[in-house]
Image 1 (cartoon, rainbow, N blue to C red):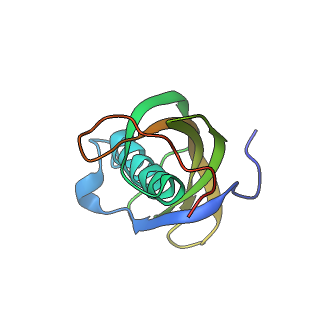
Image 2 (image 1 turned 60 degrees about the horizontal axis):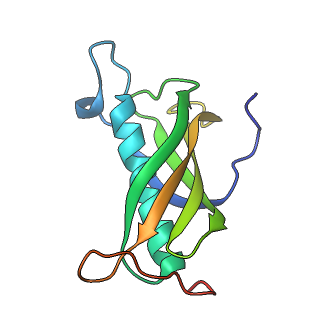
Length: 129
């Protein structure tokens, strides 16, 4: 079920550290989710040319664990754009510590809304920045 090549553009790259682990020694799923949200926010800001907020995350399944020492690579691709919102497909891949083999660990579609300085939804420009 895992493709052998990430979909989208590399947006965030970070090392998994011991402080980010659960009792089993694996990286918390919430830590991975947070990095994915961060990457989606970066891609959303670039496309919307301004502030965005996360409003939804569609079905996220953890395929493989992330371990201490792995490098988490998060890829983003804008899937669709509405008037004020957009869906961004986000994939997280672990580049394993010693082997450097890349394995997909999870993916999801995040929905972001473009907002103005008052926090109200605003139109997304027709063409990205």
